[in-house]
Image (cartoon, rainbow over all chains, first blue to last red; front, side):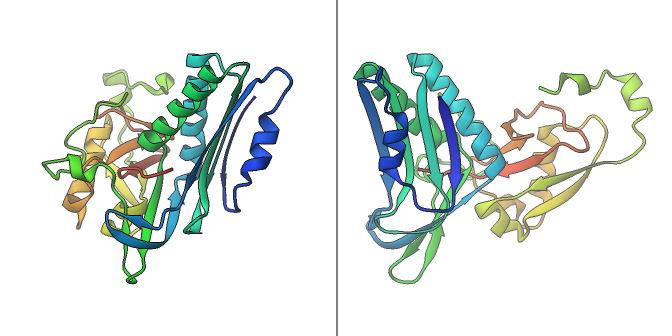
Length: 155
Length: 99
């Protein structure tokens, strides 16, 4: 069972774990991404998440299918929340279940790494000092600021 | 993808006198820099993702689009040589930051 969702309401992680539980599953792995109180030395009050929702769902579906296929894991659930979140809120939850822990752990890790690289969701951090800024995880690694110029190698 | 629409040279172009207008969706910093949620581009027949990128850079604010931005066509990341047809859902994807 693969289930993908982009949601506005709080993510209920225990409900997702329960959803993945089954007599055949000796391992249920949960990753929860949580809004943190600081980033790069700046005090964060909250994060606003925006998505290209149709493509985000499509890309999450492709990512989950790839991870399921790569690790022979049949149960993967991904929920990503969008909208205005506060420190401590869960922004994303990934659950993978399998008879044994290693395939479940690896599938979960592949999903979160690919999600961060490929899924069209953006966050704007709201700082305690009242300013706000879009987060660009790739900016530090880039020398030449040219839009579209350098096709990036993706795993 | 969309192999049914692959332009096959002369036959296609002979009938392509109508304009090829494509709406490009903008998100996050790309939307802020271009001050719009979408822009309409009139493309010539046989245009590609690379042509879309060039036209976007020519818009006011276009050169400041975030490095590492990519183009998606019909909700999939696209390469510069991919054809773009009227009616395709085209989008600028600035560097993503989900999770």
